[in-house]
Image 1: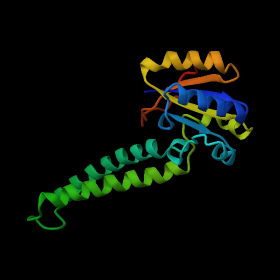
Image 2: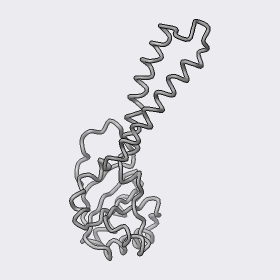
Image 3: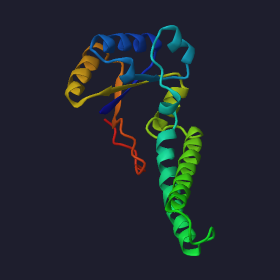
Image 4: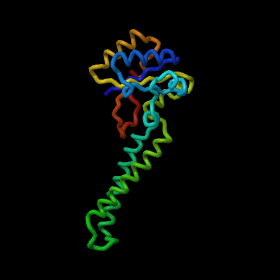
Length: 179
């Protein structure tokens, strides 16, 4: 799925966009708003982005799992070569050691991601802090043109800032191109 990032300056516009998207068949599962005015979003029943969407938990967790997997492989190879538990150890012990180190890496990566702003919305940090509303709309390829047309026609005050993906790529270091 694609994610369309729109930026608007006020809560009234955000509420109307939310209503129009719901009428167009976009559910709350595919519509998220990032704002410093969480209470305003709540009062008007606008679907705010959750913790995972605001922070880099998934991407950092995936990176941590990859690092943990590499360390786990090295540890498992070391354990197999040195046989510290004796020669009659089941292969399950080595698999368990690899799994534990990999899961530990994912856990540590996820915790690190909680301390980091989501890489996709970090470029909008100053705008959000200034009181603007970042609207993220997840669309299928066949819905994209219809949503873009609807936004251009009914909400010219909302600017399309970026087109991204809902897929979390742990290798992505470069920000996606603006819309």
